[in-house]
Length: 130
Image (cartoon, rainbow, N blue to C red):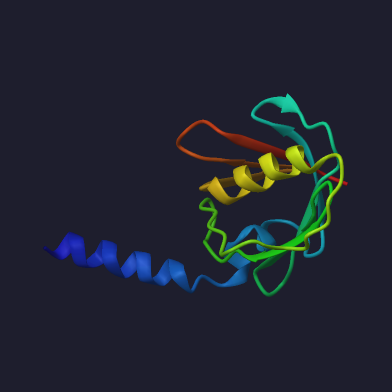
């Protein structure tokens, strides 16, 4: 019983993790991350994202800009709802694939100029500092 209570307390503490424990704290605030690969294959369109001091994420997908909240401590990655603009362009299928993947990511790792997001299903997003 004691272990269950400790686990529950740890999960509650993670919900209010300080920004310094999130990706925003692992790289300079305002770093622009350029999507390089999606599931180990080169991504065919430009997509970027930036983490802010407030624990938010802002980015530019191939057609639309987006924002979300990300407050899980490293190595976890947990986004709130993605808010996007609604412009159409020829790269919309690639954009939808990227945003769908981004919403499913669970783990993050920052290593130098690389950011890897992944999940238990083996899906990955690899970013490089721009």
